[in-house]
Image (tube, rainbow, N blue to C red; front, side, top):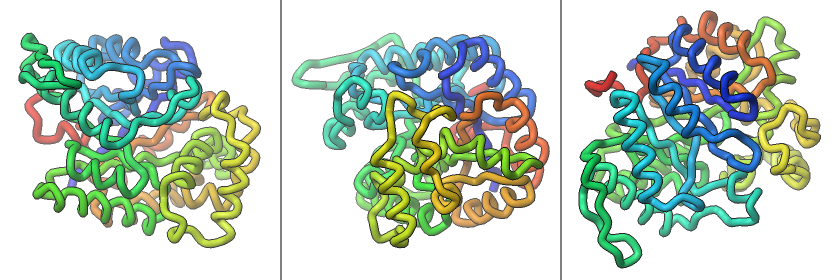
Length: 344
């Protein structure tokens, strides 16, 4: 099985810096980039994706992830159909119910029943199909395209919805195989509920990662994004999957998490990220340590990985990962969502 490795880019840096990271990722053989969408603390992902659509040739271009709370499905559909046209078929709509983007506006994440309706509307509009939303007939007849929709999930109900609804599921449940198996089991259950073939759903793990010959530095550099992952895992994964000490440490960290410093390596809450938490939610250390940890997840049936480059100067980490970890896997230069597609 061919595995894809994609890079997550946090636009908490100048836009040109984000573009440069993506261009370097393409040169190094990454299959795609996923641009975070959190408008209060980061730049606009759609601007970056549009620029990359005309400056890259092979990269899959995705949001990692956008949400449905502040954008009408018709607006989302227009953006994605346009990006699909501009990129020659390389767009992937990574979408979820909202986290920092909605918290920083004083809003709440989307309820799953509402989210499902919006995603179904979004898909129909991108395809140019007539659909009804909130009692009104809608259609975007100019499109007639298709864009893979990947649902970002962590909790049991959302994972099952992803299995019922999405072309792929991007799940952030940590790096422990037991937690990943929990996610896979729930996605499979959702697929079976909908009469879908589980094997048709692309399974992508979003994992905090930093790999370097300097082990201690790698572990320190990953803490900014690992704190995001830890908060998500704590809030969504059932209590039974944590031992008492890990749960206690996660509780302490989450109680002091500041969304105004979301994903920042300068955030005060990163100091509460203990070694136990870090090893549960991230893969951080030397290449020799990272390779078997990724291999263990591949053996569970994972199709690809997205690791967000949250460190302040990620260039060396991006290169080390590409040159010292990726060659140990049967890597695809195409994101798992586009494998087998005629796009690009």
